Every structure is written in structure tokens, then in C-alpha cells.
Image 1 (cartoon, rainbow over the protein chains, first blue to last red):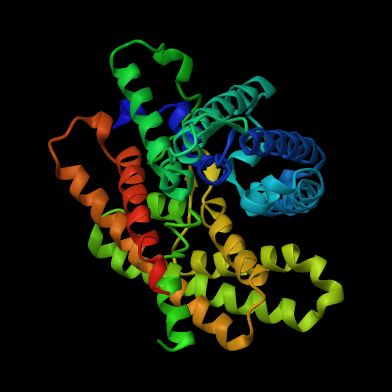
Image 2 (cartoon, each protein chain N blue to C red):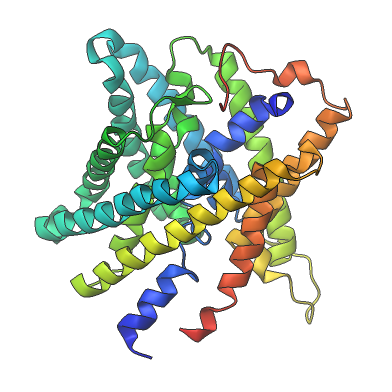
Length: 197
Length: 184
């Protein structure tokens, strides 16, 4: 399906784990995105200091070793600053250090604007999924209860099942808009020879 | 029901690595193609999960609680070792959307070891958990390969094919298996 080989699909697939695990509610989604941005930028800075030719393909291991170290610090900081986020999604904050999307900006031919574009798509996607999960799964938005007493939310959708289903729905909606030409396909065109083949 | 057997059954499906923690979803989406090759491929990945889980736990347990802060780096190195073995066996080679495939499987391995550590298991429980999760991962891996193969030959619109539809299918499966949690 070459027509669906675009930046949105790239971002969702490379950032699949933080989107699924970090979309429990909007607060968690924001924390996960902030951690991803920070570690992406730190890794990008590290990549500028590393001699890629000297390390051959091992440079990715060096980047990810730094990434895991910083994501571990973020994991501990989250436990201190946001215990609620840590309790349910702490693992996914640690795993940002080994998420492929985090290291996209470390590639030689990727500019900061290209990285920023992907982070924006990641943020919009995770917020959309988190909004739907929190609304349907927990009956609240940003912690404010919306359901009257006696009405139970669809709690199954608050768990991982909700993450899978709502991400799938958002993804299909995007493809639908793309196929109906409601979205500018050029805006989401992949640069270079990147593909999922 | 025997407690250990209950733990084993629980870790195969209701707290499955792929369905409940979403850890193995990406590698299953990327590395599966048709069902037949995936039957063999899945075994390699499941063994990688099994051995990474065991080695990671044993190393962290042997370094003592005062050095437990090193666990993330130990798990990272163990995961890297498992990926190097898989690459030696011909898996995880090349790029995916411009990123090396080692990142595709790394979250599953590191996350699984971390989950085992957080549960504070004794050796027997850890072995049962690692073994059951490897089986659970294999089942989900083959399930995703089956879904992909069926979707490729289906006459549905391209919009609904592959990854998004698989995610919705996994969501429904996750709701199904979590419904059995009351049994354990």
C-alpha cells in the first residue's frame, strides 16, 4: 500500500509503544511527549559529538545507551513529580530510551525541522488517543469527572484495549481523510528513500 | 488450582506481554509476513524473550539490592546481547522507516525484564513467568501473522488493511483475555 507510506504512519509505527502505553490520560500523554522531546534533543546533541565513521554501525548503541540513561532519570523524576503518571505508565517513560522515534533526529540527513514535524504529529496523535481513552474509559477529561453518579464508564477502554482500538480508529480516520484528499498528501510525504518495505 | 500453574496460565494470556503491556506489538507488526515463516521466526523471538528475561533477572539478583539502580543498564546490555544473537540468526537486519531494526525489538526485551524485576519474584516464579510470557508472545506473534495474511488477500479497502485494523483486532482480543482474569 504505497499511498499510505507517509510520515504519519512512520511516526505512529516508530513511536507505537509510547503512544499505546502513554495515552492512558491527557496528563500522561503530555508527560510522555515532554520526555520524548527532551531525550530526542539530548540524543541529537550526543550524535553531533560522536564520530560515526569510527564506530561504524555501533553508533546507534552509543546513542541508545545515553538515551536509556536519560530515560531512567526521567523515570525517577516522574516517580517524584507525578506519582499518578508513574504508577500506571512509568514503564513506558523508561522505554522512551529505546523507542525508535526518539533517535530519528540522530540521523545525519535529518534536520531539526523534520524532527520537529514528527514530534508534532506524535503529540497530536497521542493527545487524540489519550482524550478518547480518558473520556470513554474513565469518564473524565484532565481529571474532571463528566459522568453523573450511577453511570459507569467503559472501563475496558481505559486499559491497553482502549489504546489499541482508539489508535486504530484515529489511524483509519487519517487514511480516510488522505484518500478523500481532505489532507494535503505532500505535507506528509516521506523524505528520501525511507519506507516500511 | 496450583499457585504456580495459575501464575503460568495468567502470564500466557491475561497479562500477556503483547496484549496487555503492548510491548511486543511493534516487533510482531514489523517482523511477521506470512503465517508459515512466522511460525519459525516467532520461536526465535520467543526464545530471545525467555533468555533475556532469565539472564536479566539472574544478573540483577546477583549484584544485590544496593546496586539495583544499575538494573536499567544491565537490562539494556542483556537486550543488546539477545538482539546480536538474533542478528546472527538472520533476523532484525536492515532498516525500518529509516531506523535500524534493533530498535524494533529492544523495547519488548527491556520492558519485559523490567516487569519481572518490579514483581519481586522468587526464582521459580520468575522462570514460570518468563516461560509463560514467551509462549504468550509466540501465540500473539502467530496471531498477528495470521491477521496480516488474511488482510492481504481480503477485498476490503486499503484504508482498513494491515496495521490499524490489526490494532483494533488486538484491542478486542485484549478485552477478551482480560475478561478471564477473574479465573486466577
